[in-house]
Length: 278
Image 1 (tube, rainbow, N blue to C red):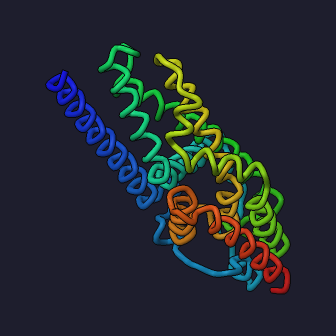
Image 2 (image 1 turned 30 degrees about the vertical axis):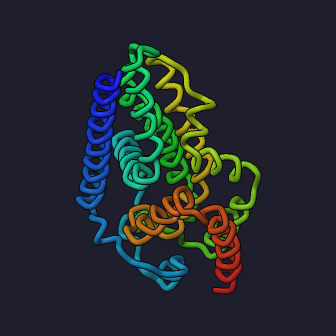
């Protein structure tokens, strides 16, 4: 039994490496696509700017060179793709512990005969289910972006807030959400990969896809309000993207992530109130 156990451990270590490299490559490709402009006619470097109150640029009279209506089916598809890739770039690092643990459990189930369909194929389905949920989020974000541009609350050129009221409303709403039971419940699921898998694991390929969808739903429930802040700072603003990705990573992985989440909520509420005075 010892040689067999040793062989299983070697397989598990190999699969973890394969999964880790695949996630790193996926994340790198997503960031490369974004840095190249995501087909939007501007690079992330062009959108790089940080301001506590981004709407001030619009109110100061900066012209919106792309204010003409440009929404079409092709542009909407391109925008949805941009949102989806951006979510992959931002969420993959924080989701990696769950994905790697799922890969280990799936391979172990296959090696021990508990689930013959286990292994990396199930891990791929788990990731596919997870990313499918973020695709749905990307489509919803695209529709919201179109509505906000049509209402004149978000700049068509910089894709950031042009209204003090809108800036304040999003910041305060995101801050309040940090204290809600739904946020707390979703964050708990995301911060406890082992407990999540123990509770929700189902054998087979369908079970793996279902598990990925469920984890994606919890991640969206945890992070959607933070992602809405991109409409304030700029949908393609790399400073805001990197800052939000770091916040999500700390919330899920840091030992004091829950406390940090509460402090962030208070900061966002205070920030929103300050925006009303600008």
